[in-house]
Image (cartoon, rainbow, N blue to C red; front, side):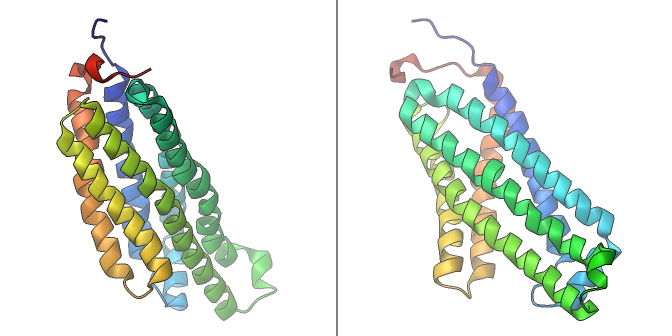
Length: 236
């Protein structure tokens, strides 16, 4: 069997970089600067003062999740020769994490500013109640992110394992994805089971994801057009 080009790999890298930019902007910049945990009044004031930016954050997340759905399919097509069942499970977990759970969770982001800007809500609730309700939706969104992160962590674990086993790219990237997987899983389950360590777990995810996902994305973007299937590892 002759080696053939794998043109979709570079596309995976490009889309992955775009996802990282969009998701980093919405989660790291928009919500990270506007939402003040535990302070309903300040959070509401920040949202109303930056309403367009808050809406752009939602749109940026939605773009990232749509792109992630495409990435899931492309990853399956790329990795299925090295283990069809594992590739399908891995891609399914990614589809569930962000395109499914993450997209539905954006309703909480939307409601956080909708309750503050809706005139009909103002006639039924006091300003303090609306501020508390808005903060509640931002907290619900964060928990939704953690639930999605559990699925995504398992996806990263299987992806890392397949990258190591397939030898399609240097094994280092597979090991780094395993590290990222541990970060996501520890944050998701840690925040629910052992609350009080949210900041340290968020830092752990930030570092591990940067080492795993960011490096992998740029490697695929830069080197993807030169990759060829490792036929010695292909399975039926």
